[in-house]
Image (tube, rainbow, N blue to C red):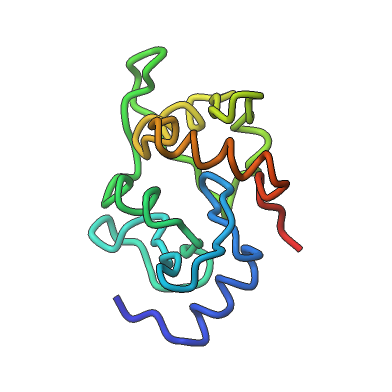
Length: 139
């Protein structure tokens, strides 16, 4: 990976310090968010800004080199959500209990692969909702 400091800063600024997958805010400077290759390098993705997004540690760790998966509702192969080409609100819904629901196949596979409804992640989002810090909104 050859992400420059300037690219990293551009990705952070564009994302408004928000994970572009789960919409949590980066409030902890001791564990900075990752710059993710939406299409992984191993699948011929590039280091250009059009293929980069800001991702929290959990989303990035679970995503790994994946770019598609089986939709849990249909079993069909679907691509993961692409924050450079798609709009978050078209694919995801935040529920009152801080769980996320997929509105589309891309939303469902992204939630599933990135384990967005894992108990500890939901508990964190519920807390963040209670203090007005979730969902993170771009400036």
